[in-house]
Length: 236
Image 1 (cartoon, helix red, strand yellow):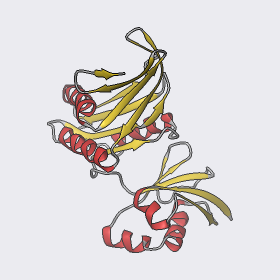
Image 2 (cartoon, one colour):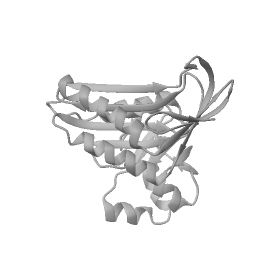
Image 3 (cartoon, rainbow, N blue to C red):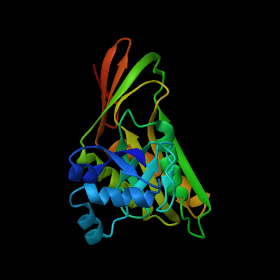
């Protein structure tokens, strides 16, 4: 018997009334863990039966585990499918989310179960500058609007996914405090060829930066600055 720490997200967290459970499993398989979760989380079995949702299980190293896989880490993350459907994935990340795992999550989504005609995958990773307009940056602080932010993010991803030659679209935007060198934004597109994917990714980047309601506060040696609007209006 092995005890596994299970991190819950979205509606699973709400049903359980907490974001962490400790589950004892005999054979360390994902299948056993999922069965145990339906036994201890009220309403979970009914939800899965009525909606047909398949839960996503990610281990501590950021690898997605299949139903019959063994669990080799003491912590796993269990979540419903992300917003947007089968060919898009978007979400917000907190400062505690490991950035290497977030990059792996986006890349894994873009390259998993590829269609036969998919020949190009591009990834954009935004990081905090240590120097901005000659000033040393101490940190950036990103504020979001919760569910509204996710809906905007999702709509843009859907628009990009409809473009000719695009197969999958994924993105993760960090919120909260980020230090110089930290990842803030991970966006990716996969599709038939580079001629389809490059312009789609560029549009994805520009629209996320200009349309998704996330606000940036920059702390430099001279003080704090709120950077607002498409023209980078700065209010000290």
